[in-house]
Length: 87
Image: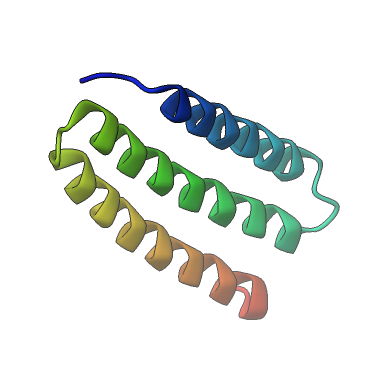
């Protein structure tokens, strides 16, 4: 479980991306902008789980990332349908 400098750089970049997307989610002028920001945060979180799995050599994180990606895809489709048609 040796943490390389590149791992720290990748974690910093991913963290900065999450912070920027959270700011867009809070300040988004429309509901569509907020939905895209939430979807982007979920994608970045999936990448973070995969990176943590490779850093700690715990491959259960990859399974969790896969399940998380599927659930967020279903949530994104539901949000898109809601924004398009209402309930």
